[in-house]
Image (cartoon, rainbow, N blue to C red; front, side, top):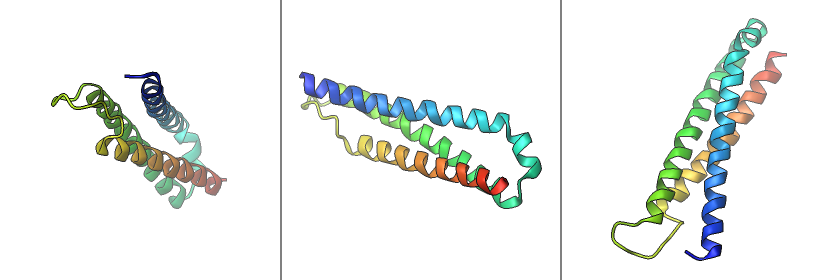
Length: 115
């Protein structure tokens, strides 16, 4: 693996790890303060928050799948050349990013509607 491939691998791995960490933190914080949030929130806000949590969990799952895909790309079974852009790796990273962005948007929208 040359330096360029190693750097690409590190960036891809770090992006997945950061989104996993942020998703976990947002879910933990919103669950912690849900009681305060839920008292004044309407039904729509609660539904949006629940959907947001689900999307955060999907983002975490997709990130873990991406990390597994990166691990598999480092040591292919068939002895083929190193390829960090596998189909499952690219799909899982894209899914993680989209789920995170959608979940964050829904969470912010739920908070705004609860005001």
